[in-house]
Image 1 (cartoon, rainbow, N blue to C red):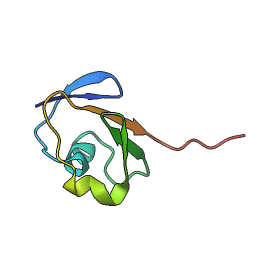
Image 2 (cartoon, helix red, strand yellow; image 1 turned 60 degrees about the horizontal axis):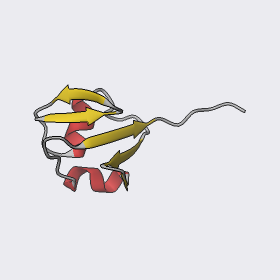
Image 3 (cartoon, one colour; image 1 turned 135 degrees about the vertical axis):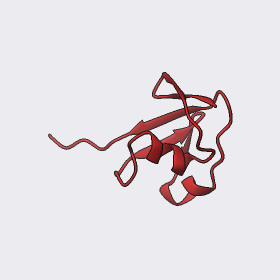
Image 4 (tube, rainbow, N blue to C red; image 1 turned 90 degrees about the vertical axis):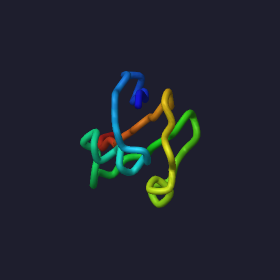
Length: 65
C-alpha cells in the first residue's frame, strides 16, 4: 500500500501504524504520531489501521534550549 510519511511517499506492507513504524525504522523509538492530521497516542498504534493514501506524521522529541 502507498502511504505518505512526513510528506514522502512510501510503499509498505504493514496494515497497522505500529507495524508500519517498525518497518520504517522507528520501532522502539520515542516518537509522536499523527494519522491524517489526528494525533495517535502510542497505546493506540497497534489498533490503528492504515489505508492506501494515508498521511502519517512522525515527530521525534528534540533537546536543547
